[in-house]
Length: 305
Image 1: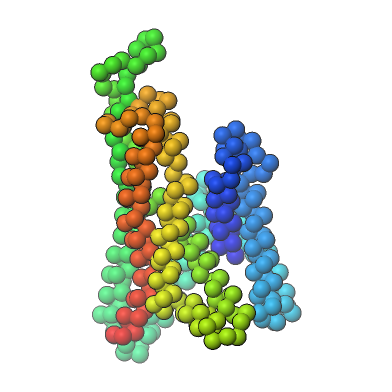
Image 2 (image 1 turned 45 degrees about the vertical axis):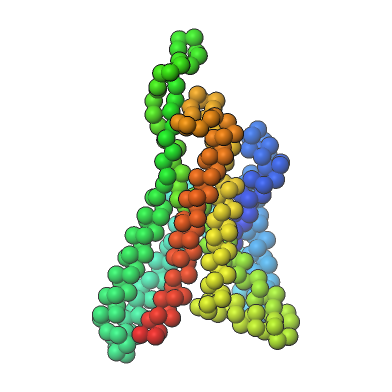
C-alpha cells in the first residue's frame, strides 16, 4: 500500500505541472489544497479500490476484513512516512520502501544459499558470481544517480549604479543537469500501468484476451519486459519534461544577469537547455530500463546454468 501513496503523489505532481491552475498556484503560492493533501486523498482512494478488488477476487479477504486492513495500512504508512520526513531523516515513503526491500534480503539470501549449495545447484562459485553482479549493479545505480552534465554559466559584474559592466567577466558557475532527473518514478508508474492489460483481459474469455493475460502475467517473459522497458523510457522523458522547467531556468538566469557562453539569453537558452536534457535523458532512461528488467534476464540466465 506504500505504492498507492507514491503513485498518488506522482499523479498530484503531474496534475500540478500540467493544469493551468497548477501553474498559477505555483506562481502565486495560493491553492485550494496542498499537494500533499491531494496525494494522500488519492492514495486512500487507490487503497479502497485495491481493497474492493482483492475482496472480489478472493472471498476470504472480504470475510475476515483483510481488505479494510489494506486501507488502514495505507493510512498508517502515509502517517509514518510524513513523520520520518518531518524529522529531517529523509523522504519517509522512500525510506519505508527501502526498509521493505532490505527486510526481504535475509530470507532471499537464505533461499538462494539453500538452492545453490544444499541442492548442489552451482555451489559457492555461483553465489560469488551473483554477489559480484549485485555489487556492480549497486555501483552503476549510484553512478546513474550522481551523473550530471554541467552547463557553464557566466555572470556579468554589476556597477555601483546597478547596471552590468560590458566586456568584463564575472563569476563563472554552472547549471547541473542530471542524467536521470526523474529518479525511480518512471519504474513505479510503469509497474502500475503493467497491471492494467492483464486486469482488463481477465474480464473476457476470448482467446486473444487469454493470450494478453498470460503475456502480462509473466513478469519474466520477453514481451512483458519489452513493454515494461518501453514504458520506463517514455515516462522518464515525460516526467523529466514536466519537472525540469527549462523555460523557468532560462528566465531566472536572464533576470540574474547570467548567460550561457555562445547562447543568447531567453528563448535560445531555454531551447538549448531543453535540447541538452533530451540528449542526456536518453542514455539515462535506457540505463534505468535496463536495471528494471535485468532481474528477469538474470533469472532466465541462472536457470539455464
